[in-house]
Amino acid sequence: MTQETSALARPVAAPADTASTAAFLRRNFREYGMLLCLIAIMIFFQVMTDGTLMQPLNLTNLVLQNSYIVIMALGMLLVIVAGHIDLSVGSVSGFVGALAAVLMVNHDWPVLPATLACLACGALVGAAQGWFVAYFRIPSFIVTLAGMLVFKGLALALLAGQSIGPFPEVFQRLSSGFIPDAFDVQGTRMTSLLLGVALAVMSFLRMPSVWL
Image (tube, rainbow, N blue to C red):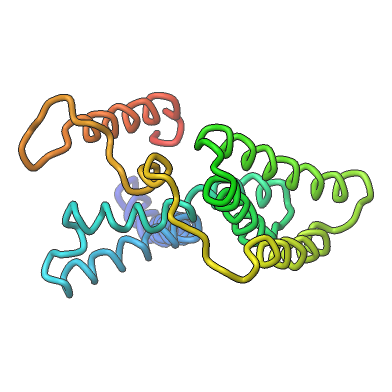
């Protein structure tokens, strides 16, 4: 009798296990769909370019070319998590960059004071737009849309429609330079590699719940 009961119970449990597995896969695919797509794209181009995509030189170029996007995305993350949107981030970045060019090239400001002034200007712009959203209850879409148009026009006016350059060499090294290598290993920047590994380990240790 026990064997018959077990035999009857097994077919019933199978659909439940299948349903729970399908639900697990569906839930995790929704959460990590973009990551899985990114991995698939990387594998595709790694194969199509005969391994060029993941070469150190190409990865370095990708990081240098997109570093400013990563910085803006980190700021946008806080805004989006709060349930708002910022349409002016590109225009404000362009305006602050134009201000840096004018201060360093046209007015011969040193790099450090000019950088601090530009950071203060960007913080002031963000605080002003946040003030309208928080205290006047104006939707962030409207405030930042106006900011996008205003600061795009201010950047054009500040530059007078022209390109300004060159920037001081010290300032250029912020985007194109490398950390000095203390180990002098041929073909490998060991200092940068060790710093990257250390940061990855620190991130892993500070967020244990993510990996469980």
